[in-house]
Amino acid sequence: MNAFALHPRLAADTLPVGDLPLCRLLLMGDARFPWLILVPRRPELREFTDLPPGERAVLMEEIALASQALARETGAEKLNVGALGNVVSQLHVHVVARSAGDAAWPGPVWGHGTPLPYPPGAARALAGRIGAAVGFPGGE
Image (cartoon, rainbow, N blue to C red):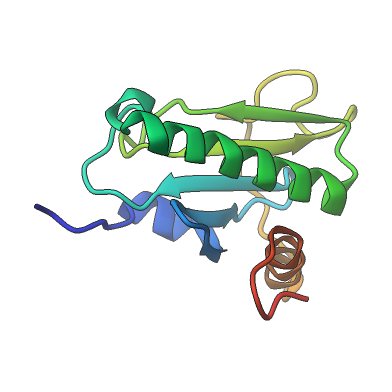
């Protein structure tokens, strides 16, 4: 059986926040939209239904935990949650903090312009606060 490996595109576009019991939690590197990605640490998953039922339930709880942390840390008016996988086929779930007036509101964030890098240290600080909010040791 193959070992879990994070897709190179996800690794390039994100900053690690930490590992939950099932998922690796990542922060997308686009300051326009505070955006988390959860990737189940299981090899060769493409679809939600590829997970056994018990792990599907764990994934849903981890999505809820990440969503609550992101909403608290950003003051988001709305959270968009989705698992598209059209560009990166590895199973991953997006949790995007949205607010009226953001760069893509009310449309989707996918394919909306060029990502805006976080200012120096800002992504690491947000990742630390989200890590603390989900209970990772050493979070800010």
